Amino acid sequence: MRAALSFPCFLLITFCLFGPELSTAEEYHTFTNSSGKSIEAKVDSYENGQATISLRSGQQFTIPAATLSAADQKFLTAWKPASAPATALPTDGVDVAAINKAIGQELFGRTTLWESKPEEVAERINWRRESKTDISESYRSYPKAEYRFFGARPFSAALYGEDEKVTGVSIVFANKGDSFSAAGKGEDHFIKGKPVPGGIDGVRVLMEYDAETISENLTNLLGESENQKFGEGESRVSVDRWDWAGHSFLLSNVEDEYVSLAVQTNEFADARGRTKRVPDSVVRERVRGFVEARENGDVVVTNIPMVDQGPKGYCVPATAERCMRFLGISADMYLLAMAGETTAGGGTSVDRLLSNIGSDIKRKGRSFEIESGELKLRDIKRSIDDGIPIMWACYSTEEFNDTANARTKSRQSDSWDSYKATVAAAADSPALTPDSSRSHVVIIMGYNEETDEIAFSDSWGERYLERWITIPEAEQISQKRFYVIDL
Image 1 (cartoon, helix red, strand yellow):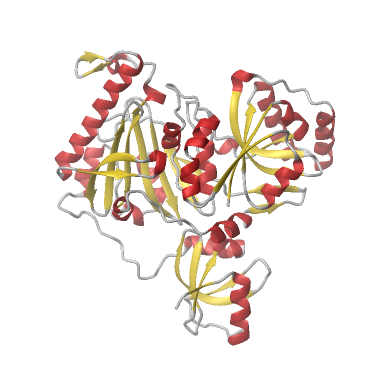
Image 2 (cartoon, helix red, strand yellow):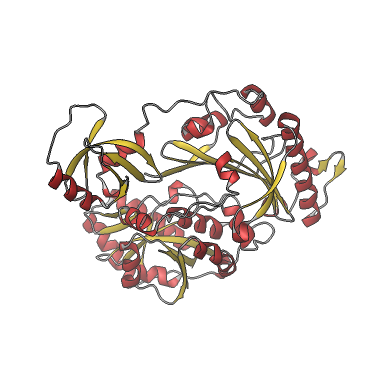
């Protein structure tokens, strides 16, 4: 019978009952926890940050990888079951070449996506890395106008992975955020020989064309689709589904919102997108394990996934997706944008978006808090020390970004004493001016008590993963609104 124990308890039981017996088998590995205690065991499985291991006695335990040393976490990430067979393709009477030809991209290789490394798949289809943490990775593309996927033009394409395996693909085609102002240039102004009107009428024409084109390509290849409901709460939509070789292609056409195509496992599609809730204890231990205390006094929550909001005003849904995924809640920024009633061309009401998805967050066992007031180090410290990031509404002025960029550079090049002097002088006489036209949302993900600074992260790509500003400066451009997803 398998037991789920914390690592300290597991060590206590093991050493009391079995002693420090050494293993000569190559399949056994010496695991060390954060307290420096070690034990030898073999890995039976590893997924979602949880390792199931067996002692030589045959007794089996499940432990969070975050409780182990960095070297052990790296070992688990690279671990592969010795007997796991690769699922050979082609299957189902439709070979890989035919699928890739219909797609117009080399999405599939010799094995299923679910047994493929995300990096290798992304390289084949030329999507750049968006984020890579100890537990997850993602690759994203905002393709050029001539790029096609099943004959339609994608505006955003993302590939997700965990534990060195692909977990899903999400592609968004015509949508009100990207397609509102115009169809494009030259021949893009015409669909089937007819001009595309402007405004929402044009969005509808483009959406209808994309949905029909993708559906026709998939139907010609795999036969008629099955219609089903997919998703939860505010993100629940109707989809057309085609299955092939362990993959489900899920096409949705949400009225006046977007056309999207997801590639998921058959099991995920059968569950209609309803995901299993990750236990609070597992998430809590994992995120606390991601709190990094540095020698200079910085305390930072690491491994928050990056989501690049792209060329639209999607900072709110992108930031929300990052925090939700970090805390074990599946999310997609386009679905969040729909829930937030994003306006045509981008732009989202923070309160509306988060109020609309609040029921989904609560249904998955998480709380959601909206707070107003001043930036206070004690409040930030309490949240960060528990591994909980804070969404902060601010005004992202040019002056503010120049200051934050300069601090980032100084932290890398100046001596710490010199840097502290610069920061102290700025904190004594902060000089940032708010601008209501530059409304923005970022993640507060760290602090330094000695320098009275906060670390924040923008959803603009990995270059903006961590920047610093003093609390007095931050207070000047703060909207005094904070949003926290908690356990």
